[in-house]
Picture: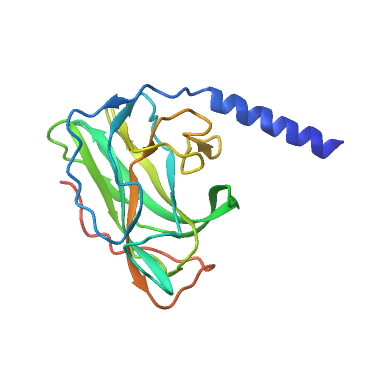
Length: 227
């Protein structure tokens, strides 16, 4: 009976942690931003509304990268070249972010963030001169991941502050597509917390031809910065 008791305790703790936050009401964007997107991408590149009052600081957001990337036609492997996350930022924002590539755990009915395959170098975001929606783009040098598999792209807020930061979401919300870890483990923002949209997080991809699906790699080559 001890394993069952421990499992029940873990579930109770997780439920309590999730209850500490409640989904904010989305505010529709007056004019959705014009996004520059490539043909070969996966994730969610639509922007409909902002979610203020949720982001709390050092935390992580994960987006399912579906195996279906119709604009790419990668037969062997794929490599993320840039990780994107839309945020509403105001002057005074000074954030350090990084990106990670994770395996997809769980079942085909509900994929969840798994183990880390690769991690980028950090990028500092600052020098915001006017309030607005910004594409926080993190250049990546990913390992070549096996095509035809699901993965998760994670954006980590490593450090920093940002007054009135708001998340941006768009399109229809899907269970198990957008996850958040604020220190209590991964939580499904749509299925568990009631967000109405998937968060606007996507990855630019390139095809590659030496796929290494299960090996840990490193990312580097960060050259750009907001100044």
